[in-house]
Image (spheres, rainbow, N blue to C red):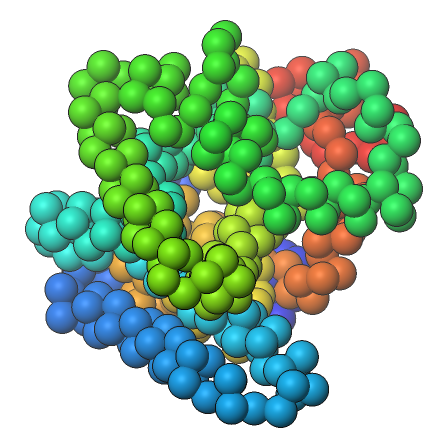
Length: 372
């Protein structure tokens, strides 16, 4: 048991149908938690923009005046700090995609489109695939993100990576280029019967009615690409990489890391189509503690269980709402306060694939395994 009685150990979470319903959970949440304040949401947006602008100003105005040895410390500090702030800004765009930013859908889509396009992320494309992730969380057949493989689906070379060096290489690969590969070719996503790409309006991820908005998303990314090209011509490639490129790489690392840890844990069950239902799938996630970064990341990881139950609750009300539902959730609520680095390494070691336990257990309930 964790602090205040939360389940934080490796004991398995319940996998049977809960005795409570979604409506019962909603009733115990204070009604004001569902209110979306345009003013409050914009205040967090402006906060992130202020710090991002401040870090940019310091780096571009003073770094060239600093002694060369100091820059070996100053630039990494800028990259990490700016990357963290921009990740928080991107999470506001994610909130827009859930219509949790304001009461006005057009405002949410406009703000989200601008933010995500600036990050080379196709807004509507991700909005729709992410919505399907929320609709199918915990399903090994229909989930859209970090879908675990069964043992029979593991590639032949997996056994050669099941060691410390292999885990370092695997984590390094997915943390650095996993995000662009997910967008470009749906790696770590749901398998489709043909090539799936977030930039393709005719991708099997999307319906016919969504194609125009996928194209609009591509135009937003294309405009940002043109701006970056002009910056390269004006400032040089190294300037663009140092000021913009590496912080965006950090954003991708953080996005993959947080999503991975939210949905990968030795205690969490997954389900095939014979056992899956929406509520149990939504509960197949875990809250994580990023310490001081929880606030910077707008509490995306320490209130993630609630987010999958009620994604339209804005982040600034999520902690209060989480506290309200925890007594009802009981053992279905999971909070793991293990340090992030330690948890990442443990999950990489223990959570290789999912499989049912034995012939006596429910065939549709699968648990993480590590023996190849």
